Image (tube, rainbow, N blue to C red; front, side):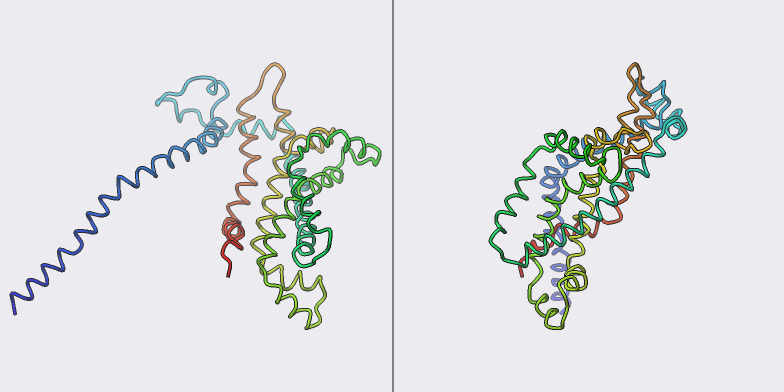
Length: 299
């Protein structure tokens, strides 16, 4: 009996050995994937790290080389102080927030209603509408600047937030509608029919039945739209001529001087301009992941 027990204990102790061996064999194969991934991640993060680091360095040291002795010497927030004290960048942030938040709300509302119509109603022109929405994404928006500028000049919408919001809504609604249509297609139509039997109107069905189910998709469309509006430069540069109405991207372009540029201020402005999108993405990361994977698995 003692011999049998000792044999079983020996077998039990010897079982983890193949697992350890398999783990050791997997390590070289894992490195084959982890090393390229780390290199790509470093390439992506390096400009961001360098931008943040340069915004903290003294102006005289930005054009100089970096050694291990002076890598952390002289770091301060002087560039950020000069940015808000010597430039009008403090006004540009509220301007961009007003334009982008207003445009995003309008775009998401239009895209939800249009996506619901394309997802739930069958009509003859539906394929043509979908084709037009896709075709708008192939058109470079730069060709629209001249005709839109002339039209807005007649309507007296130049140099105003209203005109810029209209442009932003017009260029972001097609893609937002396509995305919302895909999210709404994943919701069974039996839920609509059950709500209509209970006497719900179309708007009630959208707000109380459909919207809670596709909320991750709505967040995804909203964040995508907001980032597109926040990063837009060309229309804002052409349509806004008053310094008090400029957006963040136009304000950064104005920091480059003809005979010299304060690179510390430019880097500080770039960091401040990137903060809203980074914070927004960090807060809504889970919703974004859920929205991107919505409809990927068919039940």
